[in-house]
Length: 257
Image 1: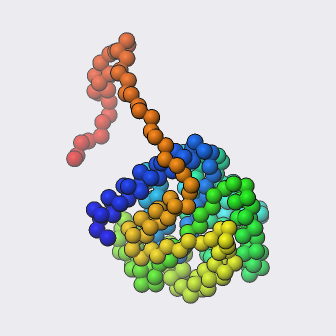
Image 2: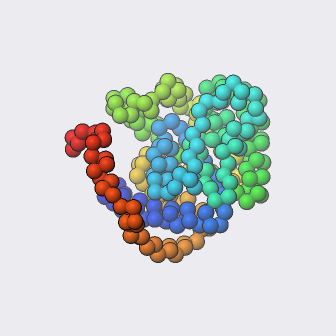
Image 3: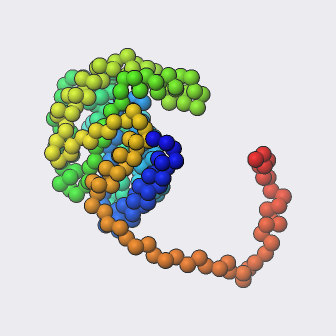
């Protein structure tokens, strides 16, 4: 998809996201959006595209680091639950509790028994969230082996992207089929009627972002509100002074452009 066409379609969807945001605030809705997928599937760019024109006070992006020693002794879901939304908020997880069914089991950070218990409990937890009125939307970004390899090679050679490349990414490439099996088992256990997985083909990043945002909007029963007409007030000149002169001798950065 050409950039101009993409940006035009994205701008329209961004307008709808603002309408959704206003509905979330006025209705007190609570929404959780989960993004999962292999490394280099495009989760970060997807989340940025979805939240680029809405308020971070309403849309909270969560990308938790590895658990601390203390967190490892807590109930597994505990550190995720504390990120859940209050009324009028949307929480967007860049990876979530599903780490246990993916990276943790593949990389040996949890036992088979811990993963088994997780797959048993996760659907019940999600049912409890929905019963409490939370809207839960789960996305899996499906990237091909060829496209993942291309993106990893780009990260290796492009200085702007090297920060994205970690030893864990390289190991995930080697363990492609282990991740595939973990994904398949996770889907069997947690692709439920009350909290289904929505699969997004993400080889074409631009098309994937448009498809995802469009689908997300279709999942939320938001209503458009008519924006209030705002009047810009005149400056109050009661205590006027030469405020520009007061700043004239301050340390401005060099104007190179």
